[in-house]
Image (cartoon, rainbow, N blue to C red; front, top):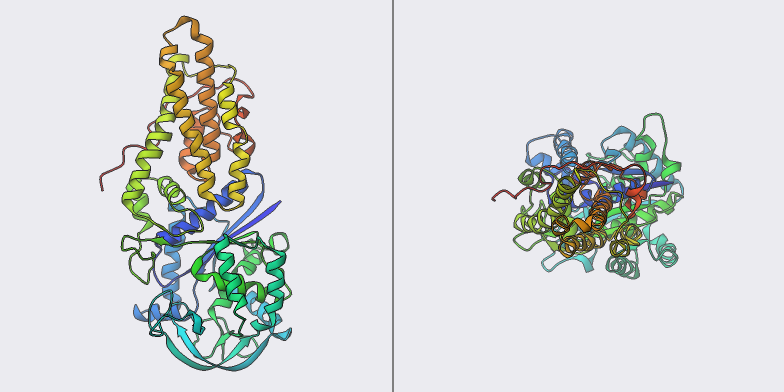
Amino acid sequence: MAFYITTSISYVNGRPHLGHAYEAIASDIVARHHRQRGEDVFFLTGTDEHGEPVADSARANGMEPRAWADLNAAKFQAMLPTLSVEPDFFIRTTDPEHARRVQAVLQTVHDNGYVYKGTYAGWYCPRCADFKVENEILEGNRCPIHEIPLTREHEENYFFALSAFQERLETFFSEHPGFIAPARARNEAEAFLAGGLQDVSLSRAKLNWGITVPWDPGHVFYVWFDALLNYYTAPGFARPGVDLTAALWPADVHMIGKDILKFHTIFWPALLMAAGLEPPRGVYVHGHLAAADGRRMSKSFGNGIDPAEAVDRFGSPDPLRFYLMRDVRYGTDGPVSLDALTARYESELANDLGNLASRTLAMIVRYRDGQVPPAPLDPELVDAFTGLPDTVAAAIDAIDLSGGLEAIWQRVRRLNRYVEERRPWELAREPTATGQLDSVLASLHEGVRALAVLLAPYIPTSAHTLLNALGRPESGYGAAAFGAGTDGPPVRVATIAPLFPKAPAA
């Protein structure tokens, strides 16, 4: 079974910040989870390299747009492995294969009668690369996202007949209630649709940094149509000599930020319909991370946190991956800071999980010479863990990544309480309690092992280190059930250095 997940693609008009890391990490967690379930996953991310924002930033830095795009695309590519994010393909919209396929799709839209030539006059944000309608504009003719003055544009363009899809989109939304999540994002898209669709510019005549319009080389395509099509074009050339489009399309999940909602939930399905293609199955919309100054984290505001700084501070991407999914529920806005990351690291990763893992391994080594006793599992823990894999899977299917993590963490706390309740160090001093101690140690081992499997998509490096120390490296989803690790011959464990050592001083 194929599972196709995408992120939005990042403008190359600056370097990555924590907001980019948040979406990449969330998407990677979903992809890893579906791989655990044995699905044939294709995970796409990349960079958006055409349009006025890129041309303007290149000019401001004394470079040509292509050289500027090459420089910054490399930074986004380099960010991913530092975060343990492993896409199957990284698309750049300057790739000639992407350009060829964009031209082919939009030529079909043109030939199907949804393109015409006209003159546009209106307010334009050069950072959004977007023309704003009147009800979007802030007081003083400012952009609602970047809060900069809009410019008045007047030019001859080709238009996409978006208004022709008013009823089709209304019907599509009605028949596919899960197309947009969470509910607040769906409500926003429906409100935009209810306001009535207006035709939108498909091309720009004043720019030359973009993909040439095949039926009129004096125009380039408006950057948003070029960028949106990356999700469809990438499967066609991601594997040399193999076209994966039929196997992967429509995409299962688009992960996007809320500031680009109208493009992905209105423009994108309408464009696909105009080309005779099926819309994606789901668009999942996350909120914005807020920086210390209270505003959303953005290159435009200059308040971004460098994700590399957070990773370097802890020597691993796992703490950052955990913190972002723990502190900022997907779909909502949330404040983030290095201080809050440190607090979450110390209280939950080091104290809750790290100490639990270290104590479990150390007690098995001390009391049973490192061999997990083949003893019955404690019924109390069997009950506590029953249904957990299904709960986590349901949460991740709903892109409730924080909810899945909370379900796991409830059992982390339960195992810590179990240690205090059973007090194995006291059982070890009682000659008549040998069988009871064996059951406690076997149950702790099995609980930690099951949790490590479930945590593998969230904190892959730490989870796999722990699974290896437990002597059960299997991380497929069938191994997530409490009791699945008791099959086969007895295993030996090994003590390890603390999974989450004391956090360094800021």
